[in-house]
Length: 338
Image (cartoon, rainbow, N blue to C red; front, side):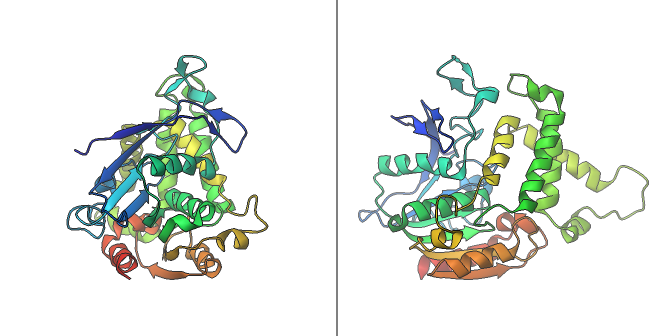
């Protein structure tokens, strides 16, 4: 088990909302060794409910003998601010009250999430990053960081993500928040508040992550039934699985954070913002993705000057970036080697 590291930020974070977040701690993992030229850095930004250890949630792509191999690269992955896995979140102590934040934890935007990465990068002595890679919520962050600091990254890989979150995606997220808010425990101040609602929220999310073809394959009934369906059990299982490892405060927060994503905010246009990216960019879309459809990745390709766009096929929709390791791995290998 890789050791989790912690970095406490010296200064309070000034958020887009104007609020400040003090005593911020960022949890992170590193794998491999930094070479003398400091030219072998691969920085991975995880998606919504993942953690700072991509060897756990991206096996086959990251790890010994994989495309992103710690024997060759110095791999960095930080737990996203507000997440359940070590970084400052709603369950941590509010220095002003001495009690957990719970519902007093501030709203965060995608731009707020990347601020600790800059401090961590300086702490690790990383002037340049060979490849910055992120998918979904992680891709939104990677994009914003590459816009804000365009000369820091040689290469950029954006998987199943977008320049701004769509009304369709926001509607899915609002439905999930409604499920959490319908749980009366959500309005309490304790760690498991809203947990039953989060189970329902996860069930809703899965419908946006997957496809009808995927469910027809994996949850097909061999014998006709009138109840106790595989698909029903699967939805409940996935809800409980998340409840066993995550909390509703972080989940509710990150859906709002994702909704806030729009690279054009504060710029003359989205196109102008994306034109600031200088890294050689690889963009991967999944043909069956209904949450982040390939039209959104095609738009990124149109606006990012030095970019290549790949479409992969999958019966698993948005989750294809996790499942289709061979297809994704071949593209990332080309990105690293070219």
